[in-house]
Length: 248
Ligand code: SF4
Ligand code: FES
Picture 1 (cartoon, helix red, strand yellow):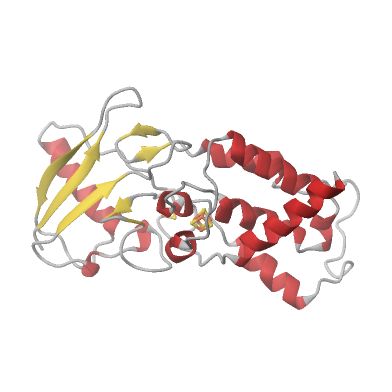
Picture 2 (cartoon, helix red, strand yellow; picture 1 turned 60 degrees about the vertical axis):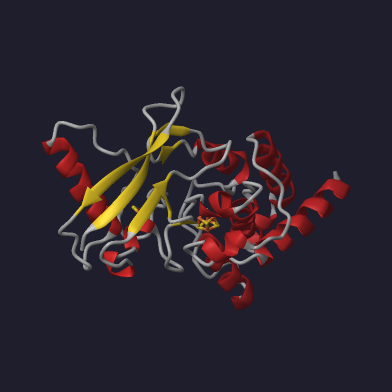
């Protein structure tokens, strides 16, 4: 396939960015999107030009690093996959593909398609953990019975990979889907209930401090989330936040 790429280039956070056009050919439909980007970068390096900076790590949908906005959608046109799992067979010969970084005030651009998502780390540090005594022998796994329904819901929430597509797809740049998944994965389980009240208050407060917008229930986050994290987590977090605020 021959493709036209329009890619956001920005040398650093202080400089202005702009879209640059690139032509690429010999793209196989069996290539992953990131392999196509690798090929483009090899071509640029061979011509003595600066390769396009983009984030990636696992390349199998686990780490959440490969955050790109492709033709107006985070992680591209397919559903329930990350950019690294997107294949070029989703595009046609002669297509133009527009590639941008995830855009949000709380995700400043570092270079080209790489954004700083350390705001997510700080939200996690504010409450995304449980405090347990780790001295002595390991506890038997069945010591604390967990309801199957709650275990399944907690597991579903725990599949969030922190990619930020929910923020990038939201017109308000809200991080509610991410934060609610991190709150729910603990608060649904007996081990996480102990600190549930402080956790939801601290994580939501940190989310607000980082400059993420409010949720207005448009639901774009759920549609674009590569892990199918459900909006019901946001409803659960709102209930917990209200209850915890009243309790002080
Ligand atoms: S909720 Fe979904 S879109 Fe948001 S960070 Fe988690 S996996 Fe990514
Ligand atoms: S590179 Fe890890 S999820 Fe895409």
